[in-house]
Image (cartoon, rainbow, N blue to C red; front, side, top):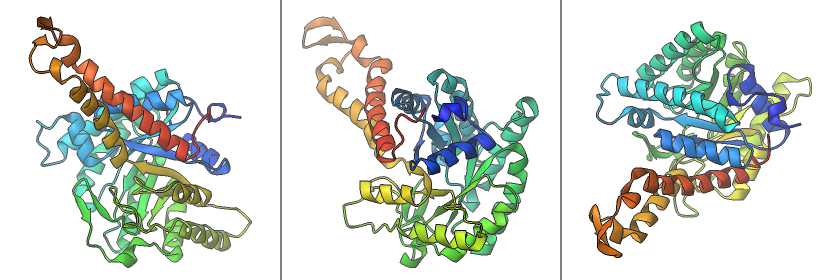
Length: 358
């Protein structure tokens, strides 16, 4: 049985998101979540998933969403980030079914200072729900990990009570992901905060499960955003198993791996670290830094290799009167970036065991 026997192609919502993650846990694989900044990037991600017959997660960060809407727009009240996230969600909804793969449409890290962005997306979900009986997005992430634990959990519960009736999945973070991404700088955070404790995970589970089962937890196990030289980041994905065991003991009844866990700061991780994380209940891994690099390399190599054809509109190594439109047309050189991104997304899926799952 493949995942398309359980959930439909296109953007998933409600219990279908949980069914997808249950299938991933039961079959020991996880799904990469790729940050997108344009329709071009989103299309390449969908193309990769289609080619290897895999479900996929597409997500927008606050900064990525603003770029999707256009850097020329003001964003003093998060209006560009709200508009860009909504535009991305509508775009993915329209084209995802054509690619024939299940898609989770997700919004990435939302810190306390970015809550107006979150509120704008939720408003769009509620308006979409009135017309279509499902939310616009599949899921949203609240990252209040910089706040005191009790405040983090209480705020997540408050929002989750608003989200659950719409069929929205919540991803929350407890513990800190190090490094810097999208304006959130945790490079100087105390090392102990990079490792979440089982008791903290249980407190989150207890509070959120009272609202709905449709949530996941990004537990810190040394994760760092960005990519670094080997040895600079000390990941301990084996700690995730302690969280699962602690929750199993608290719940009783013999249910194994009750937690849906998320792997942040995944770029540059070793294949063994990824495998261990998946074995311990990780169903989603964020991949951003590596895919940004992959998208660049195709464009970079094309421009370097075709430099003689990109200096003027007319005139190239083949002759002074030869036109160059077929080289400088964005559909040509942007496509080269899409091709190399497709390869990297396929690699991420393979690392997570997410191949031929349809």
